[in-house]
Image 1: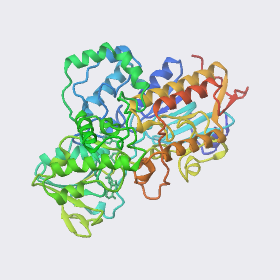
Image 2: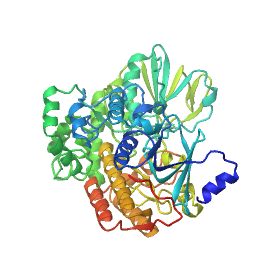
Image 3: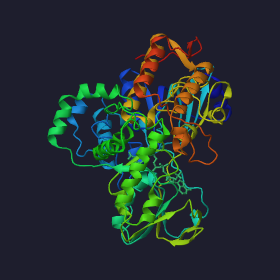
Image 4: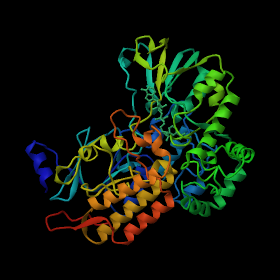
Amino acid sequence: MGDLVDAWETRSVTRAPDDVDAVVVGAGFAGLYAHHRLRALGLTVRGFEAAGGVGGTWWWNRYPGARCDVESMDYCYSFSPELEQEWTWSERYATQPEILGYLEHVADRFDLRRDIQFETRVTEAAWDEKAQRWYITTDHGDRVSAQFCIMATGCLSEAKQPEVDGIETFRGDVFHTGRWPHEGVELAGRRVGVIGTGSSGIQSIPIMAREVEHLTVFQRTPNFTMPAKNAPLEPEAVAARKTRAREHRDAMRSSRAGVVVPMPEHSALAVDDDARDAHYDRAWETGALYGMVAAFNDLLIDRDANDTAAEYVRARIRETVNDPAVAECLSPRNHPFGTKRPCLDTDYYATFNRDNVTLVDVRATPIVAITPAGVRTTDGEFELDTIVFATGFDAMTGPLLGPDITGAGSLKLRDKWAAGPRTYLGIAIAGFPNLFAVTGPGSPSVLVNMAVAIEHHVDWIVDCIATLRERGLASIDATVEAEDDWVDHVNAVANLTLFPHANSWYMGANVPGKPRVFMPYIGGFPRYDEICRDVAAHDYRGFTLTPATAQQPAPSSP
Ligand code: N01
């Protein structure tokens, strides 16, 4: 056995690690599909999941109003035509319970739970060069060795608390939207404060406002949000989609964002004001995230074009919100439209017309501390019974840097990424052989329909593993040169857009001290897919492939 097991033995470890072909960390959309595909390949698989059940994001984010903002019929797996035919979504944008129910159904239907250990967090993963295997440790004392380690840990799973003093002194209840209690939260008759106005805040604020005695919204940065126009799905629409499911899936995979969007042909500056506004009116009414974002072909690359969309949304806010000062406070002015993740909402702006809702601009009057009684800003104290942090996540890198990951030559992932994440294709990390990230930094992930991105990555990873095994190879590792080129390409494409102009979680800007790097790949899903195919077709160009040696344990036979 390798160096790492020797080290464990000298630490008086009594239990030998279990040997499997692959470990999958996480049991959300990505982890479940990875289990399904790896098992079909004949591999022995062990899964670890910190949550008490399957579902990932949809297990944790149970706050009032949580639902997807990609259409339900697109936000689901395509790998099984039977599954696609038998499952029927009830609403255009499914609620968290419905999506969780879907993932639980998938887990049952494909018998995916049996290899997954729940309520177990992976704490360490270390590569043993001699054995060419990963040694994985959990917070329950499990030790597992695996040829492959697949990090299906999601992009938005590491909840972020606000960096404010005194949280522990608060006399009332404190919740984070990304860690919402399963039994629900009693809000009726309470004075509730919400900190944060990203997607989670914007979805939950209108619902909470209807329940609570008083809602105080602490807003640091107003975001752009558009009406979702959510509605029950008509049986005819569902039947029509099912009839042409395959064709529709092909169209999704051929589109930039993994959802079928008519490609705009015109610049926002090529039409006169009336024509532009009429076009935005139609886009607004679509209730689709990409309706407005893709209304013209230059909104995300040209500041003047972008300003027309931003001003259109601000005009809508002024139209909806009765108090002009509140409308102005809700109007985003610090970032270009669409460069922080825009949101879909139901009655968000109108909620600020309610008598029991107060908006506090914490950019003008910052939060100083949480006190025993509530939230203190530079303007005074707001007395509360409940505080809800809708403060987001340590996105994309947080979930991968949670466990202590050590690659070849004792290289720590935390050290390697000290100046920002570096990957090849968002899937592989040079110096970390046989470790695969699903939707890691440098992949299109959060900029496309995650269901499409996840299936693509898992397919690529599992096909790669199949190739290695067919050819008797022990490991695959990205070269530093290929990784450098990829990081340069990701940055170059991002710099053609307005995205780096926003202090967004895409840039790591929401976490103090986090390096500012635009993390997702914005070159579009079809281009990315083409590059990934090309890499595989050219004998995994940019990777080093290492043959198995006599000392290494033979892979288990399929
Ligand atoms: O988190 P966010 P989220 N003091 O980071 C504020 C996906 N998602 O959970 O912008 C005061 O967007 C912060 O302010 P600022 C989706 O991809 C999808 O809402 O940093 N405020 C911001 O307003 C989304 O983008 C769905 O200045 C503080 C807010 O908290 C991503 O998850 C639903 C603060 C955080 O917003 C994250 O969304 C939900 C502080 N100290 C989420 N710290 C759907 O599918 C932070 N903030 C619909």
